[in-house]
Image 1 (cartoon, helix red, strand yellow):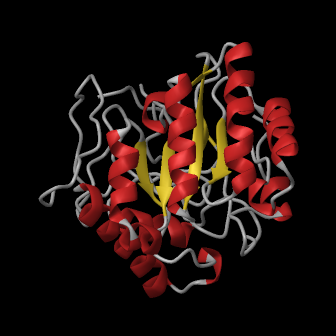
Image 2 (spheres, helix red, strand yellow):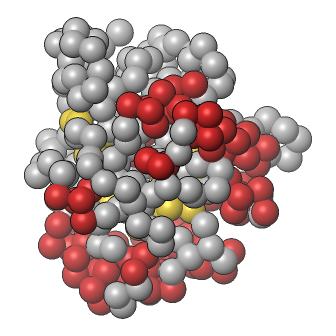
Length: 284
């Protein structure tokens, strides 16, 4: 069991156990997300500076520290991370030369395979937060992601503006997204990223916890690829903002992102940064 210390509150009660000291946290943001993507200017201003038969199960991680399964939902907590809710994961440790490239998962299958092909060329490992409707429409895509050695997380069932949802609908969005993951790959995964916002709220965190997700995932690098600014801008914005421990927000389904990816991966290599899964980035 990792050592615990006094927690950051960020909407939770004081005295809640903190997470391992090498896991760095962010606060909740302020505004509703844009429909086309998952961040808004208000969110960014608030950001800190710093199975079923045939399904493929997600890879496990080493060091099987004793963990606790959430009371509802069935997702198992990550080894080395306490099974309690807490502030969003914004980035990982700045002390290791690793970054997490995370993709909001929806869009044409061909573009998803394009991302997987580029990752395979460089040996990069990424995390895809799958939208449930996308995954349910083509579960083979989820299996392809996992078979290639990448990680799947939950990005809600239908990508609604989660800050605008009542508790019952928010709960349903997370739970049905988890169900889509289990149907496709046999597990609901370890991670949840809310849709329509860069930051979670107390209501969103409660919905996530009810489905077994003990942390919500944000990011500290956003090249706004979902606005289709062109591959060169996506690459340049990522290169300027990324550093050790960063969590980068990218999107499947946008040709400019696939086009930018080889350059992004080359830049990371030249900077001595290794693209790893989110679970690897925040390991204890």
